[in-house]
Image (cartoon, rainbow, N blue to C red; front, side, top):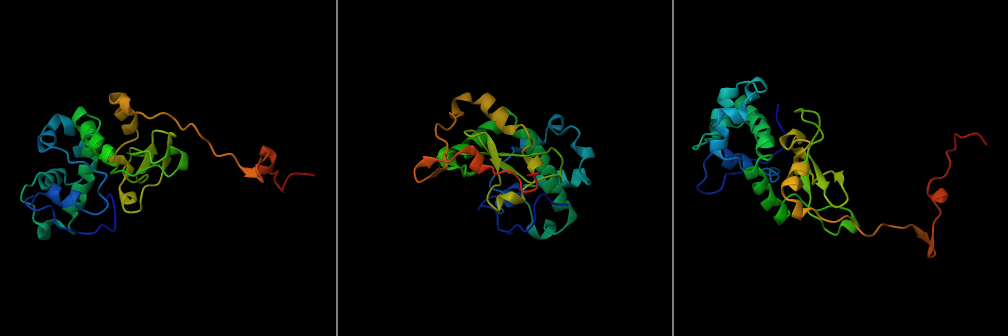
Length: 211
């Protein structure tokens, strides 16, 4: 199983021949930050993941491979399992101070996109999952201004939500409260010829109701 499908295979950045360089350069993976190798080599940080991913050792070795060979891995089961394992590691890492700082930079740059609501006025958003389980749902975007969630752009929508977890935005603003925006001061008011439409007109009675 894979975290996403239909990804476009590209080459890693010049000078970076690692598996991470290749994986993070794939179209649709822009939401992901780079987890440091020393974090992934600490067994304490990966506790319990060996029971969640088949071929765990081979998958981890591929992730840590600094001389990744595209022809040897792409299309094979180990590469799929490496994506799966990296997603689980990523969800843990972004809850740490180092991970929050890496995601803050992406948040500042608007890498996760903006809220589609007009009155949020281009508010930068954060990724969030609706479940901690691998195949339950895809990633969503969370707006800290209106406190609602939305579907991200189509390419990034192929990432599994568990790669970010259900609590990341809450931890992000707990650690960086100065970045939390104020709620919108405006709301849309339906009007007809300049007059506010009564609520009863917006929600007419059901046709199935007895007369």
